[in-house]
Length: 122
Image (tube, rainbow, N blue to C red; front, side):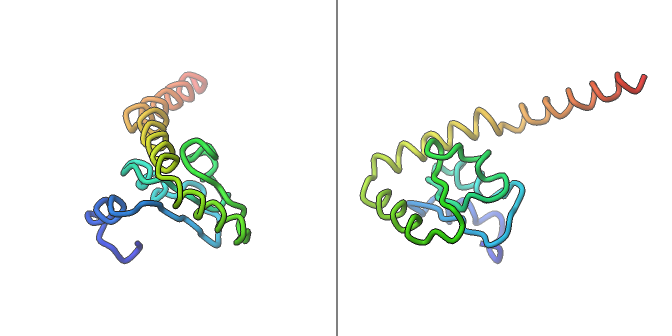
C-alpha cells in the first residue's frame, strides 16, 4: 500500500473482506490499521508495538504472534468461513475508531495535557 496514492487507500480497503497487517518490525501506532478499521474492514495483525492498543484483541480485530504461521492461518481460515464474525469485528472496529480515536477527542485530550503542563510550570 506504500506505493498507492493516499486518496486511493480507502477505495482499496473498502474492496477487502479482511486486512492483514503483518510487519516484520515494530511500529508504535500504524495508521493503516486505523484506516482499515475506519473503512469497516476486519483486521488481523501481528501483535507488535501499539497494534494491541488499536485493536483490543478479539474485539475490533485479531492479533497473532509474529512468526506464528499456523496461528495466522487458523485465524484467517476461521474468519473467511464466518462472514457474521467478520461483520462483528468490522463493526466493533468502526465503533472503536469513533469512540477511542476520534480526532476531536484526541486533540482535546492533548490540549488538556498541554494545559496541565503549563499550569505546573507556573
